[in-house]
Image 1 (cartoon, rainbow, N blue to C red):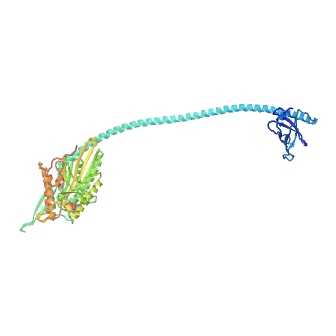
Image 2: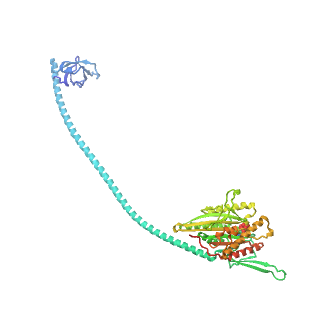
Image 3: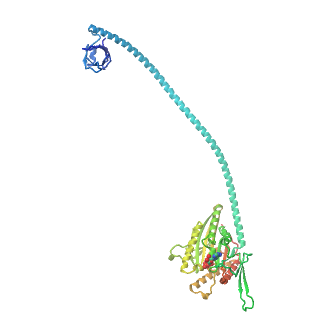
Length: 556
Ligand SMILES: Nc1ncnc2c1ncn2[C@@H]1O[C@H](COP(=O)(O)OP(=O)(O)OP(=O)(O)O)[C@@H](O)[C@H]1O
């Protein structure tokens, strides 16, 4: 068969070999190998194009030797099928041709099969694509449904939340209504409380006024060695009486000794056994008045060593604390309670000493050499102030107690320089109270004044000289002026000589019509103090007889 361009079957005879010829398929332009027998590789050694025109060409065939090894190259003659040849060769060629055409048939079958398989493959591929598309659609659908399920869950949850919210809102509304009604009740109760508080103040102060705006309490100190005082008699049945008894010996010796009694009555007489707490109970009512807007003045009068400082300051133990620390405590406690009713308080403390008619700041902390001078001034609104004095804003009890300690330290420092000075000076503690009730537009202003007076003993002029005489004159002057001012107030005189002494000038605001005054007369029980005791009781009795005009609160 003539080789077609690109295809050729050929029979090759191996020269010098006993092997049968092999059918060789040559597919130009590629080199191809077909395994026939033991021929494993055939390679054309020439350009395939001449194959069409040239009857001969040389090809190289690689053989496997018997031992399955590649044999050496051998050269063959190519015999085209159409070409003539020897008879035997021709026969062989025709055999081969037959085999080739069988193979061609088989190949066509295979090709047909391959085609149909390919077709089937195509169909299957199409089916597969369809199936994949379907699967994708199903997956999509599933996803959507899943989403819908989640969406439904969310809707359910939302519905639940909405219903809970609605329930809570209705509860909230109910509670708001309740709060509103409670607020109304609170406002109503606050009004009632305020009205009650104002009524309490009115009644409280009416009681104080009925008791008298100047009251005198007498306190007898215990005998130093613990004995009993014979000349001071305190009737158990009457807490307002005190009798000073003096036994006078008979001059002739023939008659029995006579006893002279001096009876005094005060608002209250406290015996030596009276505790600091008992003493304070009565004063605490006046302290309350100070917060209600009344000026309050409490002072202790008596000879040196009679217990004035003990009464006013006491000592450091809780049980034996005196009037000042207790009053301060009460003021701050009461202010705290009143805060619940809308009251806001401001407190200012000052502590001054009057010695020899000159003023000394007991809260001064600067250099001793730079101590300023002080003057008492009265403003147009009749408020008394001291120039260059320390006015300390205080917010709690401890702060005030700290200031009292500082004042005592200042006093004792001066005492070292001028022996026992504290007995011969007045100390005045002042707490200015300013209250505002913003909600009700009420203001009140008052001063709580607590005074430890200098020893009141009268000294014979002949016995005192120099500095001592000066001190005595100053003390006597200021104490007797105190008595004069009080009786002038009681007699409603036009002119009240406040300015006659620093003490009365300073206490001006706390004495008189707009104030409540309490005086302690402290008594030393020793027999040798009889004369001074009698003088003190006489002075106190004079004060006790005074009824100062009705006090009115400084309220705006
Ligand atoms: N009621 C009392 N109970 C117990 N001790 C008291 C009492 N009163 C005073 N004392 C004591 O008596 C002494 C003298 O009292 P205090 O110093 O208070 O007198 P005073 O009048 O202030 O004297 P001065 O004028 O010198 O300051 C002090 O030791 C004090 O502790």
